[in-house]
Image (cartoon, rainbow, N blue to C red; front, side, top):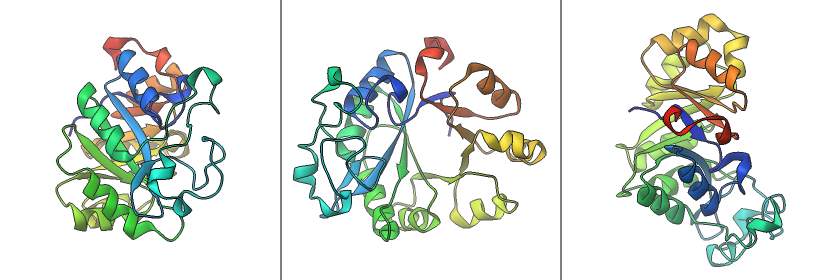
Length: 241
């Protein structure tokens, strides 16, 4: 699978409310070819797009995502906490965001973000929601349990292991997970340049988060990274994405 070089972090990055339809739309208008966003389950098992296990930081709601049913989740405002200019922006389901990505021709990285204790269920339900969607999708997660559940549910979907630092046994872990890419913190290059280069030389895509400076992105690309996740889509021109 070919990765876009520049991927909008949580949709439109810092330029729009995170994990919202309006953020994805903004990324596309800026010329971005790929976006990343987070998927978690509601109490009734519907995958919705939000990063935190709780609602307060990014929405008008209160409490835990896993205690709220989907019909109430989508009534929340996910824009006003970013800026009143974006209010109201409804909190979206995963199905809504994927449909928008398909309409806009965007590559999508869906990060499986399980609430505590829901790794297996989240992996399976998120994978199932991605079936027959008309856009290119990569599932990723820090949770290997979630990735294994996704693989059992929909084995044909591309998967990536998400790590903060590259483990010494990265190759075996990717093989065991049948994952086709590694997503890691941009700090991995500085932490162990030789290991970072070895992963890049393997031929597997390596995508780095969260890169908000051009010169850091250039260093990562120079070391062999395939892509960067960024909050600052405005730092790149259309042809560079």
